[in-house]
Image 1 (tube, rainbow, N blue to C red):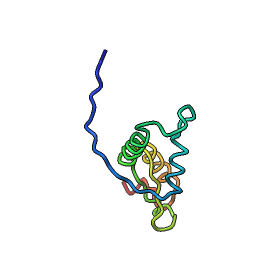
Image 2 (image 1 turned 45 degrees about the horizontal axis):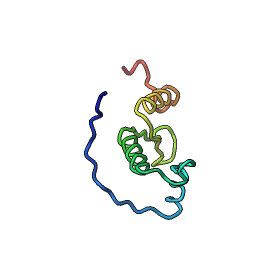
Image 3 (image 1 turned 90 degrees about the vertical axis):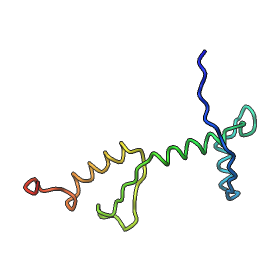
Image 4 (image 1 turned 90 degrees about the horizontal axis):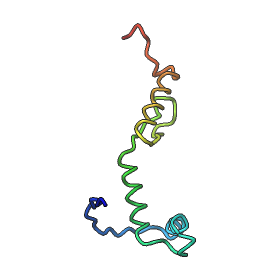
Length: 99
């Protein structure tokens, strides 16, 4: 039987608005246990934080959207979106003679 290598964990206290906490509880609650299972808050926040840290952001202003408009997602998706937008938007399309 193999052993998993565990990372040390440290506690973190987070304050959320009541309504947001209620939504989170509804998302994580176990119908079988009638409550949020032990460790599910930590697992949720760890997964979301790792996801957020690995995501890329694409500024959509050069494609004609209002200043400050952006989209966030996995790097491969953002790269594919950027390529598609670059090929279809006249202000970002490169002239072959310019290369």
